[in-house]
Length: 211
Ligand code: ADP
Ligand code: ZN
Image (cartoon, rainbow, N blue to C red; front, side):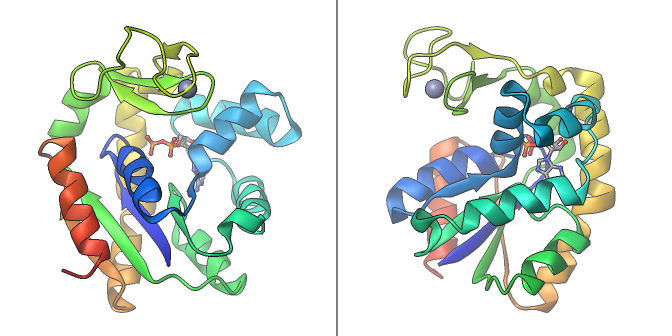
């Protein structure tokens, strides 16, 4: 099954993607994680992406689409995948279609903006493997250390309040129209995401299984 997880920055789509990919044994493909990795390694794509990411703007399509295309061609993605953070514009959705990628379901994790703003300051990400945490809602077992790989967890540069507002604006302008796009194609399922993480996971898995 090929799925897209859609939602505002900080809605928890990355966290839910991690849960669901373990449950269904398919990879979660996060363009944000791949881009951060590219920036860390100063690859050509990373050098192009950095200033956009730091400003909370979208990275140009030719950079992101290239990375995504390579990733979904990998052997582990042949039995299905979860796209987390892609597509983020109607043009990217059309690019996916023209690559011949069939999407079965689009899960929208819906969280009101005020809840998102309140959550963002507690968000942390692992420098090593990219796993996401929250100091209050999803803490690491040992403070500051990733449960999965033992590397340091840090705050993202783009999680500072002014950048969060820019990312929310970008989301509403560029990404939210995808709800309509996939609704019209009969693929959209909306899950309420403002409750506890475990509750959102339960709703997400139920939505995937069509319950
Ligand atoms: P979040 O969903 O929390 O905003 P992500 O980790 O998905 O964060 O993305 C971080 C940043 O990476 C975005 O603000 C954007 O600059 C860039 N990015 C990720 N995915 C895409 C995409 N599909 N198209 C353009 N830019 C992207
Ligand atoms: Zn880690």
